[in-house]
Amino acid sequence: MLTVPGLCWLCRMPLTLGHWGICSVCTRATRRHINLCPQCGMPAAHTAIPCGRCLQQPPPWQRLVTVNDYVPPLSNLIHQLKFSRRSEIATALSRLLLLDVLLARRTSGLPLPDRIVSVPLWQRRHWRRGFNQSDLLCRPLAHWLGCDWDSQAITRVRATATQHHLSARLRKRNLKNAFRLELPVQGLHMVVVDDVVTTGSTVAEIAQLLLRNGAATVQVWCLCRTL
Ligand SMILES: [Zn+2]
Ligand SMILES: [Zn+2]
Image 1 (cartoon, helix red, strand yellow):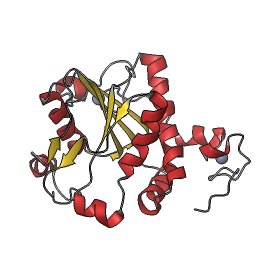
Image 2: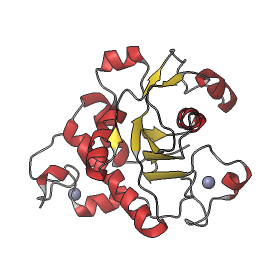
Image 3: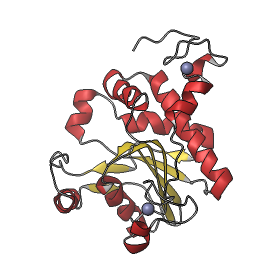
Image 4: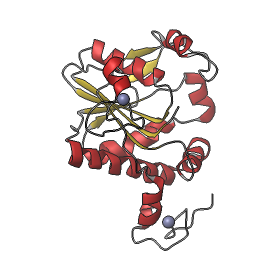
């Protein structure tokens, strides 16, 4: 994707605020306009109350905020973020997520967090790629919302097998005790940020870790929520 300063990356129209990267028309196009469950982020009948699945078997986190399903043009931008380390793409994607956080705040009183944490990559993968895309999203969000963020708050204590081909039960077992908390979170309202949440097993494991250590609440913020 070629980015030209002052032009929208997606439609090439001139931008009023060049550093945002994506114009207001394309911003609307990246977002989902259907009802989502406020707890799991999947399509639901209501936006105000958790869906039937969450009522029966709630995830460990209290709220989930997402921009869209894993569909173009959002999926193309995430692909760029993962493989090109373009900080301007990270800022534009963080802004899309911020718009949904602010919308949830206006419409359903989403509480703002005390601290944001990123999902750690397995160290060797981190080293190979040289950066953690979740960190790139956290930095601007923490700055705009005035909350704390530390990229080392959660560390991965052991390597885990690639999750893609595992069943839900095996994913859970694969991640058991894979993470360690490095900072006190007692009484804090926490947010876990990830780029794409699929089964949710990774963010669930981190949410449980935070709650076991006394976090007051945990939210999950992700660019894409998909299955
Ligand atoms: Zn545009
Ligand atoms: Zn739900």
